[in-house]
Image (cartoon, rainbow, N blue to C red; front, top):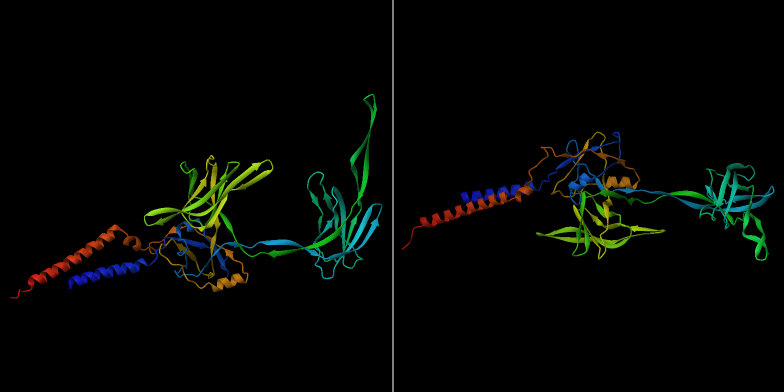
Amino acid sequence: MTAKIALLSCLGLLFTLALAAEAPDYRYSRPIVRQDGGKQTLLAVPLDSEIYAASQDGFNDLRLLDQDGAETPYLLQKIATRKTVSQRLPSRNETQALQKTGDDGIVITVRLEKDAANADGLTVATTQHNFEYSLQIQGSTDGNDWHVLVENAAIYDYSRFMAVGNRDIALPANSYRYFKLTVAKATQTRAAELLEQTRTMSGGEELQRNEKLELLNEPLHIEHIDFWHNQSETLPETEQQFAYPVAAFKISQDAEHKTSLIDIDSQRQPLTGFKLQINTANFNRDIEVQIPRHRGIETQMQTIGNTVLQALHFQDINRESSGITFPEQRQAHYRIVIRNQDNPPLDIAAVAGVGYGYQLLFLPQPDKIYRLRYGADKAEFPRYDTAPIQELLRRGYQTTAAALGGETAAAPSESKLDIGKLLNTNLFLGLVIALMVAVLAWCLYRVGRRVLDTPEQD
C-alpha cells in the first residue's frame, strides 16, 4: 500500500507540474499611451523592435489587458497606407472662332461641351520648337461678359538649349463654359539656320567678305487646344515597407569557396529583404540569403532568397541594384553569401533590413487604462471577436495612433515559475529517476519479504 501511495503521489506531482506548465509566463509589460483624449475611437498601436525581439514568431503571446487584468480583443494587421493620386481627364470642347487682333495678334474662342466638367487648365498643342509666347486667358458663362483668369501665361520650347518646354496653362477654380485665348504677339522673329557668305578673292588672297543673315518671321501654329480637369483618386491600401537597422554584422572571406560571408544579427523584425551599401563602383555578383535550421543536434543553413548584385557607373550610365528580397522572416541570425569567383571582394560599408510593420487595432473604453504583455514561450494565438473592428475598417473609419511606454519586466505578482524549463533540467530528471528507483526498490523489498514469509509445503 505504501508503494502505491508513493507511486500515485509521484504521478500526481508530475500531472500538477504539467498543468502548471501550460500557463504562459509573460515576461514583459508596456503601457499604452493614448492620445485620443478619452474619446470613442479606434486605436492603432504599432509594434516596435523591442516587441519583435521578445515575442513569438506568430505573435501568439501578445495580450492587451486593462487595469483590472481583463483581456481586450484586438486585430493584428500589417501597417498599410492609402495613397491619393490626381489624374488629368479631358473636358471636351470645341473651337468657335479665330480672329486677328492688332498687327500681330490672334484671339481664339473656345466653348466647353454641355456635359463637360469644369476646366482646371488647358494645353496648347503645337509641333513647333524653339518658341516663347505669352497668353491671356478670359472666361465667361454666356460668351458675352468676360473675366480675366490668367493675365500672362507662358508657353515655351527651348529645344535649341535643352529638352525643356511647357504647353500647359493651369486655371484658377471657375465654372465658366466659354474661354477666350489672346496671343498679343503671335509671330516671332528668328534667325535662319543658314548663313549666306560672299568672299572676293584676288590672286589667292581674300579681299572682301560679306555675310548675310536672313531673319524669318514664324507665326504660332496651333494644332488644337485641349481643356482638362483634375480628378483625385484614392488607391487601395498597400502594405508599407520599413527600413530596420541590424543589430550587428560581420564580414568574412571563404577563400576555398571564393565567397564573402556576411553574418547578420537582427532583432527579429519582420524582414523581407536586405539593402547593402557597396562602395565598389562596377560589379556583378550572384548572392543568396541563408538562415539556420536546427535538425536534432545539427544546424544546417537553408537558402531563402537569391539574386544578382550589380552596378555600372560609366559616363552617362548610372545603374545599381544592391538589394535582395525573400519571404517574410523573423530570424535572429541571417547569412548573406556573395559568390566572388576570381574577383576581389566587394567593399561593403553597411547592411540594413527591409520589411513590413505590424500594429494592434482595438476599441478602448474611455475610462480604461491598457497595457500590452508579451514574451511568453508557450502561449497560443488568441481567438478574439474582431468583427466590429473589421466592420469599422470596411466603412472607412480612420484609426487614431497610440504609443507604447517603456518596457518593464513582469511584476512579481505576474511572474510564474517556468515549469517548462524546470521539466527539462537535469536536476528534475534526477529527482524523478531517484524517486522511481526508490519506489521500485521498495516494491522489490516487499515482494522478497512475502516470498520469505511463505511456508514451504511437503
